[in-house]
Image 1: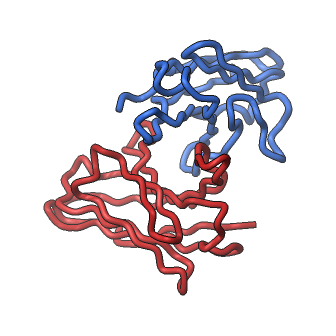
Image 2: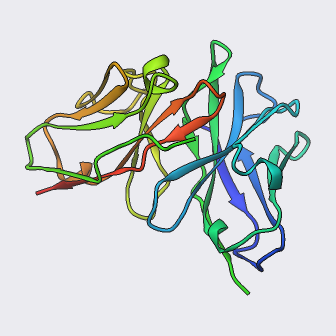
Image 3: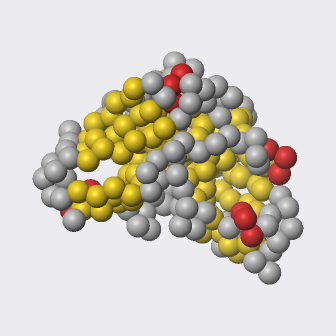
Length: 123
Length: 110
């Protein structure tokens, strides 16, 4: 059974860069049947899709974050990463990584999730 | 992209049935059978409950069912149990090749 685990700093200063990594265990990140995703949840609020990443490097980004967002995949370490630049307090959230099966060329649900990691943007 | 519209809260007594709605547009919920539902207990990660409008993943109770009519999807929980008390989120693929969630519904089991 695949497991995902987020890691990274719990606090980032305003205007700096938020960097997180999701390590996948119990399965290969190079599995052609899945995209990998980042999703966040502002405190006490709903979920917000951030990005999809494929092992080959193909990506889909939330248009509202695209200008500040970059992602990468390291198949040798079986992990993928998120970088969000120029952060503000509005980026304070629990960040989840998740797996999304590809069904008919579309990924439309998230079947496995990490436990989430709280990132606070504060000086 | 606008979030899908869910009621902020619903409640029901043990044994009863409740339905949570998820309203979108013809560009998301209404345009595709790509609606999924997630259960989230406090402090925990979301859990997939329904995908493809009405499909249940292995291990999810048959008390959970999904449907769609026009631009609105619904999650129905029958035979309510105390353990069902949680937040529920819908999600949909959109015509803009993005993915959007609903604002979430807090289910209270009375």
